[in-house]
Image 1 (spheres, one colour):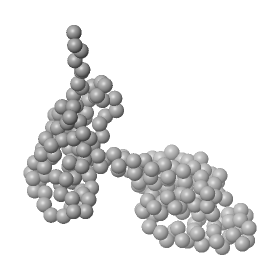
Image 2 (cartoon, rainbow, N blue to C red):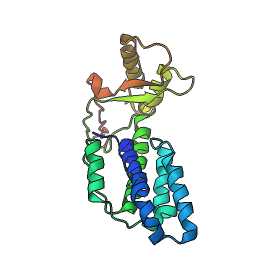
Image 3 (cartoon, helix red, strand yellow):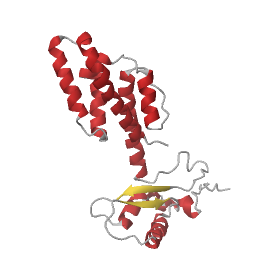
Image 4 (cartoon, rainbow, N blue to C red):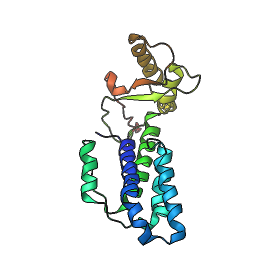
Length: 217
């Protein structure tokens, strides 16, 4: 499955390619003479950027939605140009209606990717728990190591929500930290790394329990 950031990058490259190949030709018919040179400068400026950087993707998408490129907001996405891009990168993506739609999709994809990254940094208790049993599936995630942070500290940070439940006799943070540390030792973790692999409770055949309050007779 193609990652959201990769999708956003391909859409960004598509936008720049459109402005290089088609926008330049249409500019004299859509812009006043004083604006044409500025538009061409913006196209060249964005073309020279690192288009794999999400910050640059956002800047280009914003330019398409409400900046100099907005004059082409309603321009339809050329069918052949779109499918050539999909074929080149061996992906299947629905063709957007117009260039403004491409810009909005870029921003949404980056937003979703950032949300997923934040979720990956902290173990999330499943929605609906503890009111009802929720089955956890085994899961492995990569979490970043902050500057000067040890793997043990990173693991405690990741399972912080379980630590907050220990007063309710539900938790197991230290057990999961210990078991994940054992796995790191098994793979001979050592030296400088930017991230570590973490396994959730179901990976060790654990599940979250629901506590039913006792009713006095």
